[in-house]
Every structure is written in structure tokens, then in C-alpha cells.
Length: 282
Length: 291
Image 1: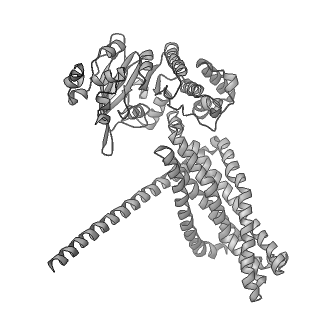
Image 2: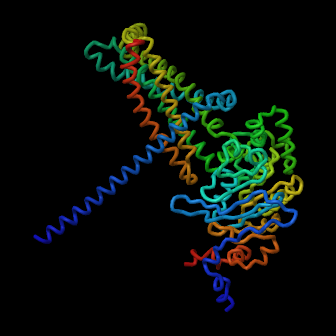
């Protein structure tokens, strides 16, 4: 009996100490992430304060737009087009069982304009450009290039961060518009080819459900996603340490954190649009 | 048996780490940078433990030190990337109204003005890979001084010629197209383009072949003689130190433990200095490894 009680007590002690350690670890991670988020917000505010210097970073801005915007059009169009086609195919099979395939335009239109367009664009830009920004800035930190800028009295936020975030804010809404158009076109083609829904009927169905602001809400969300991706990528890149391994860590954490924050902000923005913007603009 | 009576026998560990306090400057010399009792901690690690050092105007001071001695941390203080938490760094004549600049108290504007008088040659040259040689060397003129393109070009060509590079041939090349030695020279050209009063060299000869090392050392001497700048060179290259230095200081465990002219350095019996000079694998610098 005595032995059993001793055992239980030891087990309890171990469990308690493990729980304490787990709580400490979790707390540590939360504090660290909160600190990172705070640092990123400060970086974003600092970047906003540098907007007055936009004219001075024009060459870098053009180069970044070329890389982020033009360089992403083909892959984004391909993915959006295929998504539209697949959605039309999957939804069309189910709707045609009930004779409702005529609503394909409304369903695909609503999905693309409100969600798929901005989200696909964010994910493609994050994977293609966000990760590259973090890796490029991280390598610059490791090679002391950022230190060199500071020593020359060149503000790294103005010279490196401003053109990158601004390029994303300019490019992503345009890319979202392209993704919307190509996705709808892909859906319309499959609807006509497989379910006898003419392009005109597809368009008519889409227009019935959607209205002008739906497109602009998607574009607006895309602008917010651009700020999130650009800020996280620049922050992680500029705070790289520990050489090549650190550059890898910065890139991975950029992708993970940006995906999480894009989805969280998408939820918040949707709630904001429904509660505030729709009553005003429809 | 002589080994049993090595300096380790006579020098206790406290004595080894005892700071060498700066003497008053010799006649005709003026102190430009005064560092007093500088400390720096990163969490539990106490990196600089009371650095005191004077840098005279127009001299080349070489700071020697093994790995982890605090060389880079000291350099980052001199670049004003770190501000003194404890202790002081003052720079004569570079403060507000021509007064002394106190690094701990200086405003951002004063630091910016100090940095305009500062050129830094980084270990890996730290050239921006996306820019051409012209843009790299002319970067401070374009971004800070905002000079017109033709003026930038002529100043860049002049700076590249000063470091013996074929300016016209390499102006439009990216750093990746240059050899290690050429990149280093381009880095030096960028450091001198704003005609600084102080140049900091961070291990300028690391990773270069012996011929290029000599070339960089000669260039350092040449710039010193032609421009008359004050140079602070951080290195662990003994040969380079004796070639270019007016004075040599030894940083050991976060303190300056020896400082003097080349002759004084050779004559100094400090075991760490002797180990660095002889390159011996036995001594205080490698004590941890032996265990």
C-alpha cells in the first residue's frame, strides 16, 4: 500500500513538472510570436512613414513590380484557369443531377470574386515572391549588406522594404483581377463544353448573384494580403541570424506565418465586409 | 624544461586579462577616438568587459584578437551600430558644432553626420549583388548626397582608379563577375568615395590569396599616406598587422590587454600576444582546446 502511494506521488510529481514545462514552452512561444508580430507592425508603420520617399525608390519599385507582378502572371493564370475548370466540372456534375447546372455562373463567380481569386493570388505571391523576399533580405543581412547600407546612412526600410511592400500592394490587386477573369473563363468553357451552359447563360447567372462591389471587395482584400505578406517577409528577412541556416528558417517561417495571417485576416475582412461595407455599398 | 617556465607559469589568469590603460598621446599626436571602460553584454554573455583605448588622428591602429575576443562587437560600436550601454566612446570634432561626439548620448542626426565621416571595409566587401560596380560605389552619392549621374560617375571612376582598378572596364559589371580581390578593392573604393576621416577595416585580408593580401595591405598603406585618414583595422593576420600598423592593440576576453608601437608589441611578453606572434598551439588562446 505504502509502495503504491509513493509511486503515485512520484508519477504525480513527474506529470506536474511535465505540465509546468509544457506550459512554460507554450508561453515562451506565444511571447516570442507576440514580440515578432509587434516588431512586424512597427516595421509596417515605419514603411508607411517612408511613403513620402516613394519618388526616390522608383527604380527599385519598377524592378520589384516586374519581378512580383509580371513574373507571376503566367503561373497565377494557369492555376486560376485550372481551378475554375475543376470547380465547374465538380459542381456541374452534382447540379446537373438536379437540373440546376444553369446556376454554375453564379456559384463559380461568387467563389472566385469573393474568395478564390484573392486567396489563390496571395498563396502564389507568398510562395513565389514572399519567400524570395525573405531569402534575399536574409542573405543580405548575413553578407553584411544591410549593415553597409546603415553605415552609409541609407535607411534599409526606405531602400529595401518600401519598394518591396509597395510593389506587392500595386501588383496583387491587379493579379487578383486577372485570376478572377481567367478563373471565370475556365469555368465558363467547361460549363459550355460539358453541361451545355452557354457563355451568355453563364454570364447571366453570375450577374444575377453578383454585383459590382463583389469584385472590389476581393481587390480590397488582396491589397490587405499584400501588406501582410510583404511586411512578414521583410521583417523575417531583416531579422535573420545564424548564417545560411537562419536564411532557411526565415524563409520557412515567412511562408507559415503569412499563410496563417492571410487566412485570419480573410476571416476578419469577410466579417467586416458583411457587417459594415455591404449595408453601405451593397 | 623551458616549457615548464613558459609565461603561463609567471602570468596568472587575472594578470593575463588585466587591461592596459591608454597612455597620454605622444607629442604631436592628438586623440581622435577615446574609448573608456566600454562594456557590452548579450544576455548572460559579457562580451566587452571594460575596453579602454585611444585612437590617434591620422594613425593606423590594428586591433588583434582571437576568435570570440570581442573584435566584431567593438567594431560595431565604432560603426555606431551599437551604442555604449556602459562606458563611453567620444570622437573629437565630430559632434554638434564641431565639439566632441558622445556615442551614448548622440542624436540620430549626429550619428548620421558621424557616419558621413566614416568609411567601412567589410570582411566580404558587402557589395549589393543586384547593383553594378558603378551603382555600388556610387550608392552613398546617389542615395545620401543625391548628386547628378555624371558627377557620380566621375567620382566613382576616380575612386576605382585610386584603388588601382580598371574603372571603365568594370563599371557596368555586377559583383558576381569580379574576383575576390577585385571585390575587396571595390569595397574599399566605396568606403573612400565620400572622403571619410576614419576608415574601419573588418578583417580585410581574410579569405584572400597571399598576393592579393599584399595588394590590399599596400593599398591600405597607400590610402593612409595619400588621404591621411585615421584607420582602424580589425584582424588576426599578424603579417598584415606589422605591415600596415602604426600601433597594435591586443583584445583578449573583452579587454585591451596590450597596446603599443610595432617594436613595443614585439618586445611585449604578454603570453597571448606572444602566442599570436608565434602562432603556437600552446598558450592561453588554446587552453580550452587542450583540455
